[in-house]
Image (tube, rainbow, N blue to C red):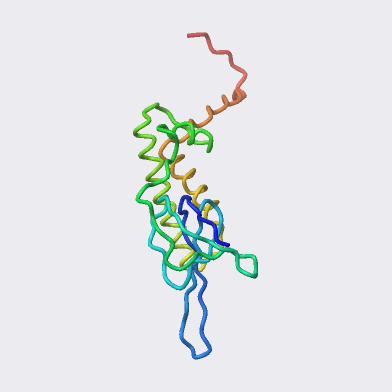
Length: 171
């Protein structure tokens, strides 16, 4: 029995191999809301952050597979944060020196988009990594570059010993 799934498309992984006759194959697995679903031998047509719907069924090995032709984008994108990404950035440990929700939202969305493209390229190149964790790490790095935390004040230097036994008059 299949289930209808609706969630945020986070990317996909690929697995490649060779058929017995030597032809190459590529198998795609999509990641939606942190869960993997078998997609098939063609690349999914969805952007990271888009809301997708599809029917999925557990196969005899316990993996979820998407039913052919049921994968569709809704045209909507998942919200990054409720109208203000500053709390999301602060929760991720990122400094936000000003409170412009529109600018913070733009920076966060741009960081997520860039991070997702970088991680997708790494996965396509064969890197074995957790896409969600890799994207989150890159987003934190990007936002920390945009809004670096204040450097700690240097400790005052210890007084330098006077090598001479002279007393200077005060100014």
